[in-house]
Length: 92
Image (cartoon, rainbow, N blue to C red; front, side, top):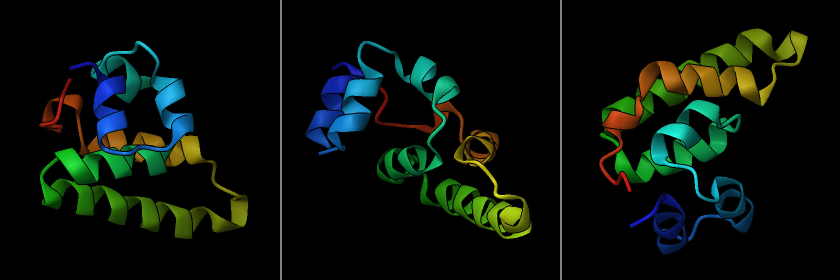
């Protein structure tokens, strides 16, 4: 099953499905700038403890960066530090 098909099956938002297109999981994971999409997917496919760690790290970074208006891309990098494509068991 392709990643796009899996996202459709999981009822991902149409914007995410369109963005993924024909990307592999690894390509999508390393190029995604949307931490919210990454955590949504990881929450359905990765071990819970990894998702919680990544979400907490994002929250800490967002709190520290609130004064400097952190960008979602910064948070996506934090998610990647805690969850790799190999951790996502629903891999297409």
